[in-house]
Amino acid sequence: KFIDENYSSWYSDTDGSLNSGGEISSPILRDNLKSWNQLKSICDFLKNGKANADEMAGGHIHIGANVIGSDVEKWKKFIKVYIAYESILFRFFYGEKVKPREKLKRYAPPIADRLYKQLDKLNCARDIDDIKNILYYSDRYQAINFSNISFSSLDSFEEDNTIEFRVPNGTIEEVIWQNNINAIAKLMLAPSKNLMDIDYLEYKIK
Image (tube, rainbow, N blue to C red):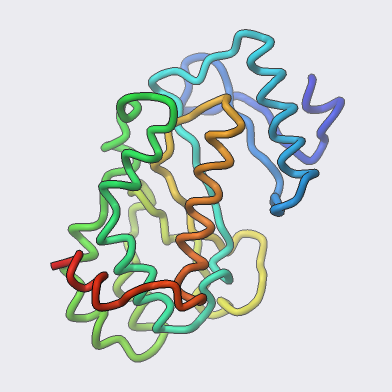
């Protein structure tokens, strides 16, 4: 009721995976004061109502795949950064909690080892179809879900053309949401900003 009356572009409902409680989904958010204030207002309402993101709750974050686009070299860098730092990212995404949520490894298991086994193919990739073949898994239940990506239209914005990060623990702390969103967005932006020491990255992967 609070969301319907105040933030009609947000969505709140029950979910088939839940025995009790519900989930909240945001509209497409931008990095601006309006988005962050809406997030804070909803989190404050939940905290004031004594809501709890318990040990079963997960937080899924979708970022537009167009952030990386169709540049094969950017995809190579993104994948290599993720391989090198997945274990650190997992710990970061626990947020204010000290351990992963229950069933994390069922619904969002690590994928760095699987990607590592594709390194030779990754280094030889010449076009976006090569990247698609490396990333494509029919199962969306993994740390990063690549199944929503429309590889034929990576350079233009499309609402559902996203990379879904499924690891973060659920939380009602808006600062944790900000930390997670910023970390993921910067992870995807970094390959296009020449901010990486590729030699060091290769060393970390080895």
